[in-house]
Image (cartoon, rainbow, N blue to C red; front, side, top):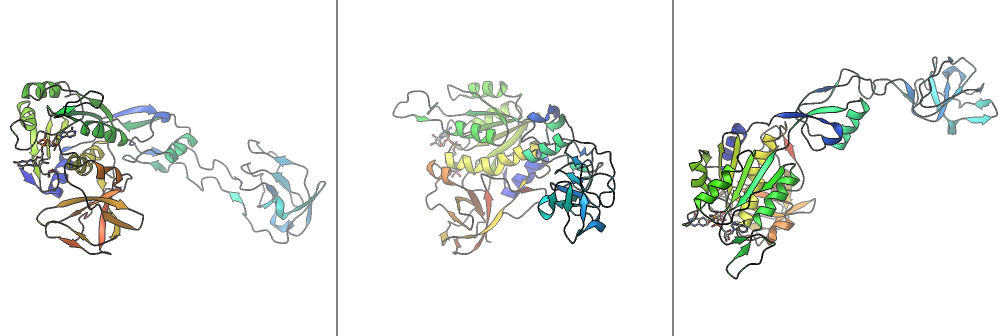
Length: 406
Ligand SMILES: Nc1nc2c(c(=O)[nH]1)N[C@H]1C(S)=C(S)[C@@H](COP(=O)(O)OP(=O)(O)OC[C@H]3O[C@@H](n4cnc5c(N)ncnc54)[C@H](O)[C@@H]3O)O[C@H]1N2
Ligand code: MOO
């Protein structure tokens, strides 16, 4: 069945579900997706405190000289209430004494022994940090489906949280097909080539937060492929590349079908990468990518990234675009939904002039890609383009148009 790019993505989103969850110490949750709503149990700040090193004072004492014989440090528990005609020296973060109306920073006062000369104007509440002003207890500060970053870990730690429920890591298995392929650490003959797709997918899946495993295969037969599939069926995602078109040994899809794969599509209206297939055996998602390196990379970015994001439990699982403009005029062959890799300099995007499905070298410089509909043959310099970034995340829950032109 041939589907459009948007249909393929919809099929993926509909047929992939978030994985099960586990409870981990917060030291281990970086990059994971939160699987619960987390509520604050403490006010932040916990108590009214001083924002400056200074003096706790009464506003009516502005312009006067007051007595100061006490100091409150962060970590102290002040016992003496503040009285008119007095000041209490206080450090940043220290709890305010009872009766404190404002803080005067040390540099705005003049101290001589126990006497402190206060400035002529003191506004009530100045340099107070009020309990709960950052976050009140009872507030949900981390939600189901949000990705854990270092700043969210800071919040969890500030609340004394030790463990968090997160979605488990996605297990990805990759295997290559093709008798001509050899691993990079072996000697090759003149008619052979190194397998570059498998290391590419393994590392890219790792970058996207997955646990990865490589299943090597020596020969290209249906039997060896079926064996590789059987030994990988505990994975959440199986990725293959090659053996999906019309060649006499292109039996990747057949081997998966023999093992009961439910096939959702086996061709996409996309250039490059038309023979991309997606299916499932039980809960294991199967993606067969074409062997051509650049074609497989492009389809990894468009479809496998969608599978990973959807499976991760992230609320924002749809890739969005960055709107920018074209650096120079660009011509495209008509007739297909076309993906063009290119460079983004922060202001403009430019597709690479040289990019064919079998190439490897353009991929390393790609910051993102654009997708043009079949009728678009020319994009003039300055045209608005929608770039999908490769090396950073730009996601949301909402569907967005991601085609350029047309
Ligand atoms: N008669 C037709 N021929 C082809 C069609 C078609 O529709 N009719 N489609 C073309 C398109 S489009 C593509 S894309 C390729 C897809 O081919 P396969 O997925 O079957 O891939 P292979 O034939 O196995 O390999 C293609 C090419 O890529 C190299 N390759 C494969 N795996 C790797 C790897 N792991 N690392 C590096 N390079 C790899 C392989 O050596 C071939 O050069 O089919 C067209 N043909
Ligand atoms: O579409 Mo194939 O994927 O041309 O290389």
